[in-house]
Amino acid sequence: MTHTLDTPEQLAALLGESWTFSPQQWAAVTAPLEPAVVIAGAGSGKTTVMAARVVWLVATGRVAPGEILGLTFTTKATAELQTRIRENLRKAGLLPERATRVGDDDEEVEEPTVSTYHSYASALLSEHGLRIGHEPDTRLIADASRYQLATRAVQRYTTPVDQLTDSPRHVVQYLLALDAEMSEHLVDPATVRAYDAAERPRFLDGMATEHRKTYRERNEKAIAAIDKRAELIGLVEAYRGLKAHLGLMDFSDQIALAARLAETCPEVGEVERAKFKVVLLDEYQDTSVAQALMLSRLFSGPDAEHGLGHPVTAVGDPNQAIYGWRGASVSNILEFAASFPGRDGRAATYPLTVNRRSDERILATANHLAAGLYEGRPELLPLEAKPGAQDGEVTAVVHETYDDELAWLADRVIATHAEMAEPAWREIGVLTRDNSHAAAVFDALSDREIPVEIVGLKGLLRLPEVSEVVATLTLVQDVTANAALLTLLAGPRWAIGPRDLALLGRRARELAGSQQGGESFADVESQLRAAVEGADPTEIASLCDALEDPGE
View 1 (cartoon, rainbow, N blue to C red):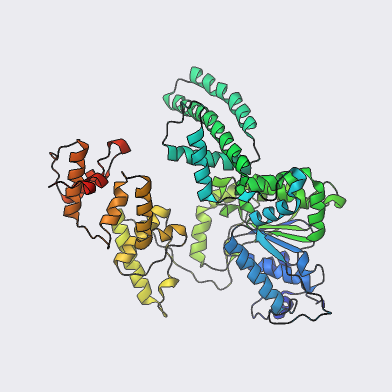
View 2 (spheres, helix red, strand yellow):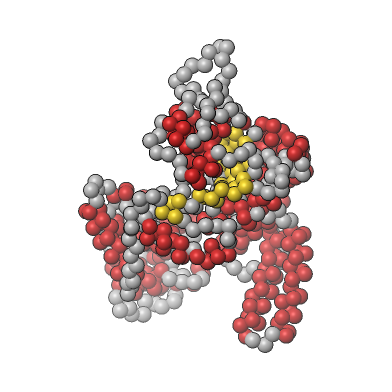
């Protein structure tokens, strides 16, 4: 059954909604079946538009539900988009209700496919991986296993290392970061070595001709980085060899392999284009070079017979790119037409600029802060307030100390809660610059008996029962981790007070032969800090030693 949907009101009525779509949203929802990019500003209803487009395409008979593919980044975003699409299709009568039984003579209606980019790559490799020699039983490993495997590669490495003088933990982190970056950018070790070999003489020439100290220091750092990377590439090769030997791959390998599959086997693209008549790519500004190559080779090509003009819609906002640290390239969305050209060589652009979450002054402040981004990208438009938006309020407060700021924040949260018509702590949000600040905010609010939840994994580490588990595991790996031991000793199980902890610190120094207990401190806090601080683990007075031999 097809519907006539010529106006936003008709689509809203089909979905059973009282509101209607804006002209910008309606243009994106009803875009022709051709490559297009939707520049969706913050709070502009991106997910609503994507789900509504699926309903419009299915309701007007352009495609069947099972011929639609939606890709996004996280499992949470996938679940949200999938749920929104499914609910909208059911509201419109285009999918049966869950409790509806399908008769023997009825065909079961396939739902749209919605998954993460990595899950889609995994499915591609499972189905077509043998075309490039990829074994289907290759096991995918997550971050913890990657770290363990990289540590093993470092421990087994026998080639002399002179430049990488960092701690083993840091070397493992560098190794994993370089390996992931090379995979996400589809660059092999030989290419990196060749690039560094060509660039190093230029910095040496700069050292010889540049007399300004600042520039000489920059050149020295660049040369040192190149020399370190030369050794690091050897470790990356050892790590990759270990993965291959054990039949393992990580998420970066998965995308790189899928990109190679799409590049070398055009018949896979033919299969995917026949399966999915419409493709929606969410958060496209955060795709990596390898992901963009995989998608463009699958869903675009040199002519109409080989994918040119296939209906691919990328949705995202260059101003919200957050994954550059892991290989994402914002140029993917800015140069979308080059990867997915229409049959006329261009791709349509649909802006969504009306923010439906914030008041006018908040948006004015956001546009002011992002002015530099808008100047460099004329195709991007500033955010606009929704019709009837309130004036809003933006306040800047400067404090003399960080403790003053935290105290003010707790007072403000309590006052805001008291002023709310229906008080609910979960309706109050606090944004911080990084996780270390989030931890301090958590402590400050908890001290005032305000219920707090830190969003994300880092929040778990602030829970006492979790921090004790982490401290225990840290001590199993490193008995000189005094800070971890203090977490346990001062916790609710042992509840050892600061004076006894200070005595343990003095005993630890006696056993280490560093101070013979002769140093005096102004207060207990200074004594505790002296017991814990230290740069080299071999020079740290271990509190574990003092526990084992507390003396008199």
